[in-house]
Length: 275
Ligand SMILES: NC(=O)c1ccc[n+]([C@@H]2O[C@H](COP(=O)([O-])OP(=O)(O)OC[C@H]3O[C@@H](n4cnc5c(N)ncnc54)[C@H](OP(=O)(O)O)[C@@H]3O)[C@@H](O)[C@H]2O)c1
View 1 (tube, helix red, strand yellow):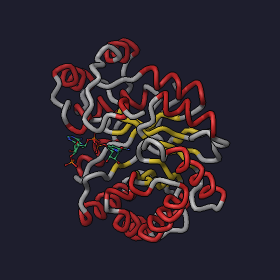
View 2 (cartoon, protein in one colour):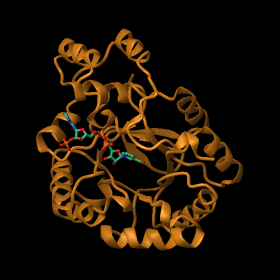
View 3 (cartoon, protein in one colour):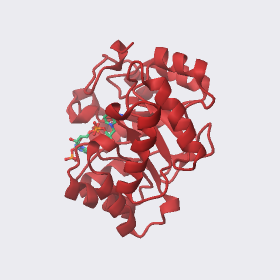
View 4 (tube, helix red, strand yellow):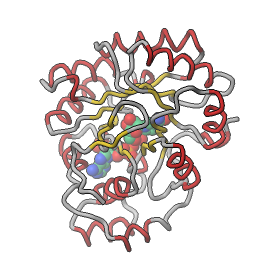
């Protein structure tokens, strides 16, 4: 495995390369979101994941401008919310997001959720939005294999990325293999299982073995599993801690051991029931 660093990127099937570690900002309230994003950028993060529904796009944009980091060096992701899905609606929604972010373009625009009867029309809108240069790349989120199969029959552009919940306690290998086969990057959201599995004793045991924190073990596992990873923290110490995962490597035996931990444990919504 090539040596990974905080500024390592992975190429996508579109013309962008994606920093392998980003900062998530779901549930970051406006002021704390501004501080978190600014601090993360100052600490070397170059990938920020927000969404229209998070209500903090304006703070993300302000933090980017205040950080002093060139906009072109930052990979900025936002998402089309469910209520805005549809061909016309999605085209309006990106303009609202761009206005709030205070930027002419995002680096990736994602369909937040595979809304029945709307998602394929929304995708056509995303293709247009990409053509117009309002986003450099397009992808999806919470798409399961049947949603992707359906989309790939219709699409001209294969999604660059599928952002899904993924951590040792939720490993959908069928989805991961499908994405790999189609050249779609898998991005792991809630890589810390939304904080709900940090105290798992098997994680604690590995943290002691590698002299790292429990969160660092979970983030490192996801990176070594070949995912793009977006842990969220509003806390500067934890933002730094979550990026300090490049000075150790989980052994093949430990990676193998963790691969047995799947228990289909979801902390967020369940897209498997969406037809
Ligand atoms: N597309 C989707 O539908 C979707 C759904 C969920 C999430 N996401 C994206 O993925 C990002 C990450 O997922 P997430 O926010 O659900 O959960 P997460 O990153 O798995 O966990 C975040 C929780 O862990 C805590 N935490 C962070 N670092 C820690 C550390 N080093 N030690 C101890 N606790 C720590 C955070 O608290 P503090 O903030 O207080 O540190 C927060 O409570 C989101 O912010 C969002 O950008 C997308």
